[in-house]
Image 1 (cartoon, rainbow, N blue to C red):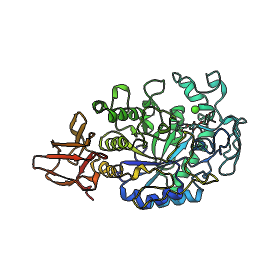
Image 2 (image 1 turned 90 degrees about the vertical axis):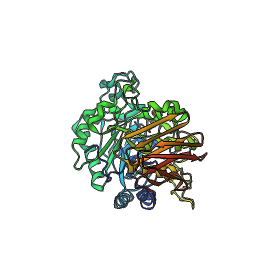
Image 3 (image 1 turned 180 degrees about the vertical axis):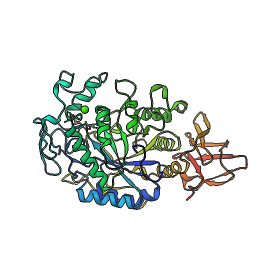
Image 4 (image 1 turned 60 degrees about the vertical axis):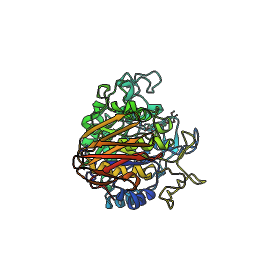
Length: 463
Ligand code: LM2
Ligand code: CA
């Protein structure tokens, strides 16, 4: 159902933000499959606007649909189908970022990435086709200028135009039918599920109708930014799949910056999603650059803290996890690495396994990759033996794994690991250091590593 990512029990999705389909197909085959990734969240697949006015080919043009044709900045329909098949063939699933709340922004018109014409002010999108009757009637939006501007009123949040984006009237059978056809086409191609963009701005009943009309099972995670500060709450979406937990981004950032705060990472009293409903991440494509739901998040720009944050997220039993994979950027609008014609560049791989051409590839940073294996190995086990003191944190996961961070760079003390006797590799440093667990489960844990002061041992993940 909506909660099953259908990837053989694996636990981590990577968002290959703005990657081309050809690059993703290669990454599935050469890296993601062996590393144990469940799947890839890909950038929106539909036809979108081409922005050259208020910004030059910004990343966010993909959040302004022109039609549900499958040619986008990431490639053609043929390339998309080839990618899905090749990734599926190596056990890596594809999750599509589905933009269903709206079409392009007011004031925009012209030709989209698949060649369809459109005119937002006229509410005319012949590539679908959608016409004025398919957009939310103005009198249903209580705001004075027609835009979303009062998060205390669900009618305002859901019936008004989000930053001027033409809002689809999802209560109508016709809009629902077109969106069902779009998602069914993707499922037919072999896609395993969807991130629903701006789900907070859609009525749950409309999503129910769309999801109920699908011809195959699909994993769903809904993008709802809820800080317990508005009228729309994450729990309205719990029957429809997992829900993004943006409070986790703030919590993990605060806790990793100041370990004394790590003890209250999950605050259910604040309305945070229960673990079986939460979809979590350290940062996403929006908040890493000051867009939607931004705040004091930790990103690849701070590699030391980022490795600690991602490792901690992957070690700790809460939610379904997504790892971000970015490109370097200076300005918040800047699109992906490109040539002189704004064609997205290939992701090249350097001899040391890192990426070139402007791609960050956080998912290839050794501690991050290896913690994916840890999370897979300890799936389903309970947190135990939690220890937090000064700049040291440690805990075990049932009898399957033990994890520790010494933020200062060094630690040397005895812990109850909960694990069977034996000698285990620290998977973080590729077995350069090892841990011997005694018959009573105790072990001497030594960490000396200024850059990556992390230790993770687990049953069944020594390479
Ligand atoms: C999302 N989740 O709910 C996406 O994660 C987020 O990236 C999207 O906004 C948003 N919802 C709508 O899909 C991005 C970006 C915006 C950008 C929109 C549309 O954060 O800045 O808005 O995509 O491309 C841009 C301009 C904005 C303009 C709007 C409409 O930045 O100034 O508003 O287009 O033309 C007048
Ligand atoms: Ca809406």
